[in-house]
Structure formats: C-alpha cells, structure tokens
Image (cartoon, rainbow, N blue to C red):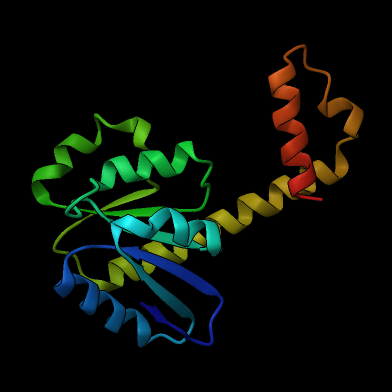
Length: 166
C-alpha cells in the first residue's frame, strides 16, 4: 500500500499490527513532507530493492519475520539508511544484548507520536550529514591514497564506496 505526499522523506513501514499501521500512517500523512509505503514481511526486500527509502520503521514483532532478524538481514545486505525499531516494554532489556542488530534507535511501545517524529527527523538529518561528510572526504582525498591497503578486499570495498559517491 502506498501513500504519496509532496515530500522528500520516503518511509518504509514494516508492521503486521493493522491498528498500529493505520495510526502511524494517519499521523505521518498529516505532515506533507513524508511519503509512507507500508510493507508486509514477505515483500520487504523487494520494496527496498525497488525504492530508495530515507528511513525504515520496523515493528519488533511482525508475525512471520522477527523485526530483529529483519534488521540484521537488512544490515548484512548492505542497507545503510536509518532503521527505527518499535519494541515492546518486555523486549527493551534485550536490546543491550543485541548490539550486532544495528538499528539506529529503539522506541518502546506505547510511545507518543512526537517522539517518533523527532526520531525520524534526527536520523534523517544525521544520515544526510554523514553521507555529505563522506562525499567531501572522498572528493578531497587523492584516489591513490585510498587504495594503499595490503588487503585486496578492503581495496575493493573502498573502490565501491568511492565510485558510489562520485
């Protein structure tokens, strides 16, 4: 399901909780700067491959695919954009033990809408800043210096990153 707004922030909402999805879509659609695309667990990777999202919001407990596992798979697959995970109170103590998951932020349900909105804006700006900073660093570092590593895999990774930001 896709909801178009005249905005620049594209959000993928991965959530099997129908009531929560409807509430979030309604709240976010009140702000014209968001484009919300809702996804079920089965087509998350298709959605991500076919679209460029600024932010992904994942419910920690979708029915078929655990939100923690989904986040981990996205990161392993190379997804670098911010991920905000909505977690339950009982799941909160486990977050510290799952540092390898790499969600950018965990918001405990129930939460207030302004907290989510603030988190979306913060992570969007932070990601844009980091991207610009990397682009500038690559622009001003001589290419010869980038590839002086003795590790061939590191050189390949650096080359891919360099080409991505040219």
